[in-house]
Length: 284
Image (tube, helix red, strand yellow):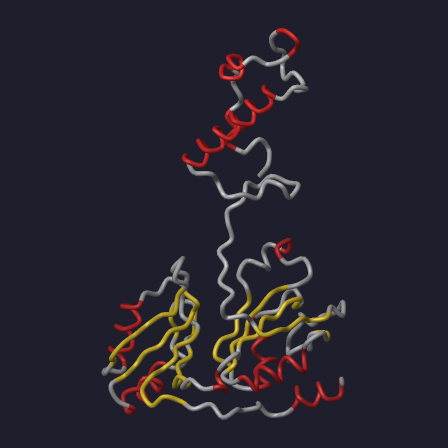
């Protein structure tokens, strides 16, 4: 009910039973262009004792997800890194450093996919509302939406990774299919009463969208054909023309010999525009 949702929004953060590593740190809000060796150098200079560093990226594209891990040789060194680097300004980002969670059932399925968010909302305001349900590892809006409203005509898209599944579940139960509540000082409340849609993000949903031609009408979305594909398409077209020639009641195409039929020699000499065969005779 709405009363239950309001009570959840005004209570203290809901904390699960997540367990944490003694030496491994999670580092959030990293700049997109930061490299692993640069992160290693930064942490080892301000808190010596780094054993390994890894920024989490998309395996196919190399795109940084904005967070990584830094493992230390001892608990004391890791704690020193938190004291020295949590809240450190790195470019335009303020990084967040904390002990990383150990894998358990409570730490699985903790990421929410949030759509239909009001235009003008900031990541800070998004985190302020969602942070009422429990500790957050990472909270972000999909980049480029504010500048291109056509990309998200029904509202903005965001993601939030909670520390525990129970916190994420509580946020989903309280906010899904309801107008977005305004954070303190937030002017981007959902004045049109657009209902926010929230679901658990599919961690295995790693799709790479193919390039498109840009033509309108919805038919011209296709992967560019490789040279061998074009040759194969031309061979198929020639076979189709030969079949048309041997059909007893074939209709003439562009003139022909006696009886209105297209001669084999004329078929071989007939030329087509480059786009005709390259695009698969219009069937994209």
